[in-house]
Picture 1 (cartoon, rainbow, N blue to C red):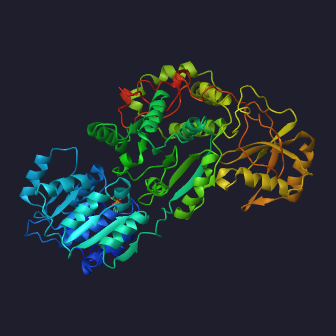
Picture 2: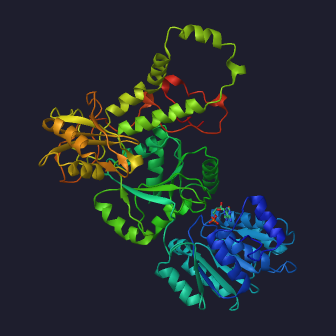
Picture 3: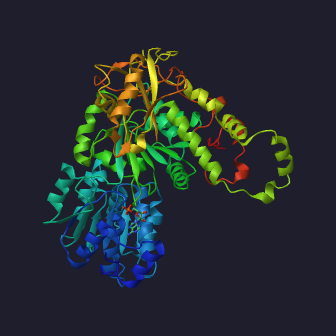
Length: 602
Ligand code: AMP
């Protein structure tokens, strides 16, 4: 494994990288840095966001730039202001021990005179958005006659945003002799055209396979209807109390609507799109980076400049019009070695869009049932229990109260105390979700309120869950493999993390138990244990029984029926509050109204 010094970078740069915590080069850096340092050939690099591409092109330029000359030697074009600023900041950080190396960043929506003044002072490296760069060239404030390197960062995105003319103009303003470095996550025809028309026999490198997404991202899809799209989105958030993600929408209006709904429903969310002023966008991005916002609802373009490495989820509220953009979206998670999940909410009609995306990302989407209320309750409950477990107790602060608290609770056993505490936190939550509809049942008729569990079914417990890679299809397969009976009916299925439930025609109760016990099947190396559940199906059932082996599985059952699947104010316990507020400000985190609920933004 090489170091930055091995790649040919000088010690002051290496030192700056160490300060930033860059211990070793990423794949794209390992390939691009020696190539650019040793050759003036043009370069085509296939690199996703999050692969370290900024350093891949910036570091060799910093290394090679003539610091004794104040002429502009490198022009770096990037699609958005945010990304340009980020690249400029990165270059400043990388060159902090090279005092004569200067970088100026230019972008629209900011005072042009100020930028002209900075350019006049001279900078070896200029980073700019295409429109403002062309403007400055026309005003003769930016002279590119001495440019040795032209970088087109996120070239696909620049073309998507309609900057083709501007790119042409900048390319025309630079000398023939320059080296062009083109970085793009995807290579649609327009990008290939730029490469063909403006680059000479470029060398090709890739951070992974061409156009392929990160290996760290798993891709799931939920089948929804237009009506259940938003409730399904909320269930994703509810299932993951620590979610930190971006919800992608196709239009500004859709973005604002989804964000408004989430905020109204008590989630810690906000919108990011082009109708906001630059100051508003900056503020939202800052809050998101600081994790004061947990769910950012954004358009593709507006999210481009966000440099956040530890997103847990990317959610496609609607799939992008241009399928290449899916790669950009999902590439926002699974960065810097972290794992991530990209979820697409698709209607039956939109399902056809998944195949072409699968071909690009070279991975299959996993059909995942929309989480049931029960799964959500379990996850939330265990999250709460973990939190309780991990809470540090400051005895100094509560010492004085403890004797009287102990006295008051003296008559309760440990078990009673736990039960009361969980009920206090959870009763409203549980009852809310108990009545929530099964969103996997796509026909609205089946979603109607008040369906009761089938009397003819018996509910079984099985000791396998999602952690064992069990899914409804595999469970049905497992049941069928036991040859319980010809065409037995399988009812509702609930897959939870470590165990699951399924319903079988009551007439086959004994046969089912016998078959599992006689066959002693194993599943992925685990021996399988099946039992009849002792409780009734108060929060299960509600689905039409079906024939084993036949038909489409459409999820879990439970009594259905909430109006809008939204925890109202009296049923809080969703979303999250700001993580970094002093605890004294978490005034509304009262146990009686639920844990983990977001603080309303003041
Ligand atoms: P980029 O693809 O340039 O947007 O970089 C993605 C993230 O990875 C940024 O936050 C960088 O600061 C970080 N990064 C880039 N290169 C390295 C490296 N060699 N080691 C650690 N972090 C890196």
